[in-house]
Image 1 (cartoon, rainbow, N blue to C red):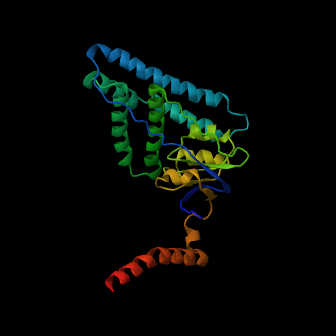
Image 2: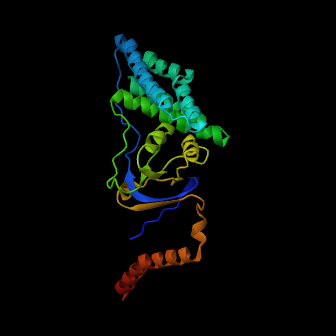
Image 3: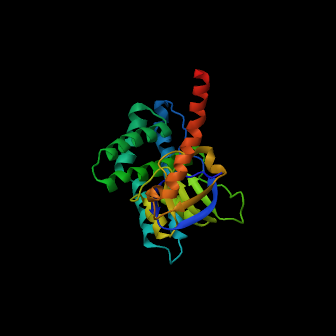
Amino acid sequence: MTFSVPGLAVARGIAIGRAVLVGSSRVDVAHYFIEAHQVQSEIERVRQGRNAVMQELARLQAEMPPDAPHELTALLDVHLMLLQDEMLVSGVKHWITDRLYNGEWALTTQLELLARQFDEMEDDYLRERKADVVQVVERVLKALTGQPRAFPAPLHPEEDSVLVAHDLSPADVILFKQHRFASFITDLGGVTSHTAIVARSLAIPAIVLGFVLGKLAETYLFISMARYGYAWLKQPLVLVLMALTVLIIVFPYFQERRVRAA
C-alpha cells in the first residue's frame, strides 16, 4: 500500500527512509494562581528555567564543529537573544506580579500576546519569526516541567529514517543531524523559517506538510521530494492513479444506493 502526501519543499534533495514519529512539541501546563508571598520565588523559578535553556543552546554552539555553516551559530544566537528579549521577560514578570499567575501560565499568556503581534505583520519573513518565539518558550516550559526534548530511537537502526514532527527548532535540527536520519518532515514552517535555513545549510532534505500526520507516520515509508513540490501532481500517470482511487472509493457508494432504490 502506498501513502502519498504533497508538501512544500524547503530544502533540496531526495531521501528515502522509514518514518519515525516525534510527539508534538507543545507542552500541557497547569494554570493556577499563586500567593502574593510566592511572587519572587516564582519569578526566580522561571529565570532558572530560562537560564537552563540558554546553557543548553550555548553548549550546542560550543560543540559545533569548525566546518559547520555560519548560519547555525547565527540562528542559535537569535534564540538566545529572544530568551533575553525585554518584551518577553517583562511581560512574564507582569503576569506573575500583577495577576499572580504561576510561571507556566505567565509564559503562555505572554506568548499569545506576542504571537498576535507577529500575525499582524505584513512582511512574510518577520511573520515567520513567531515560530522562533514559540520554540524558545516551549523549551522554557519543558525545562520548568522537567520534560527534556528527546528524539526517538529508529525502529530499524541499520536503515536511514525520516523524522516526522509537528515542528522542529534549529537546535532540534542540529541534534537531529547527530542521529541517522536522512530527512525530516514537519507540519509547521516555511521556506523562510529558521529551521528550513538550517536544513539547507546542512544539506538535509526537508518538507513541510501543513497538517497533522498523526499515527500514520509511525509505519509508512516517506520520500522527501524537494524540487518538485506540487508539480508532480500534474503528471499524467499521477492524474490517472488519482482518478482510479476516487472511482474505487465512490463506486461502491453509488452501487449501494442503486440497490436500495431498486
